[in-house]
Image (cartoon, rainbow, N blue to C red; front, side, top):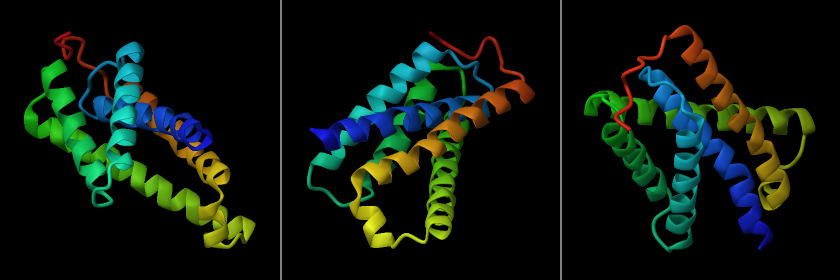
Length: 153
């Protein structure tokens, strides 16, 4: 039960940040109720996919496709730009995760195996990237003026 709670504690803000970042890239105004609900639903889908015994990484391909479809269906953004936003958003997340974990291990001098095996520490170190994704989305929205007519819903 603790693992599930930790997964959602870190996953919901992280995927909410991914959704917000993707929408901000294509100039869709950030409607936080929709963004948070979408982030929560995508996090649940990721949890279900990862719980099934399938090849690791498939969940990322599926959630990128789901995010792109969400943007296509709920906004007036083209399919190409929606896929670009989804891929760019997850690429940014992956880059942040890599940099933050490397910095954490460098600063703490903690063994990588010890770090990975500590579920609580692993999830806590993931929170800064979630916060950064949300901050980046806010910054992009501020400097890349959102299109008020971008939403279909």
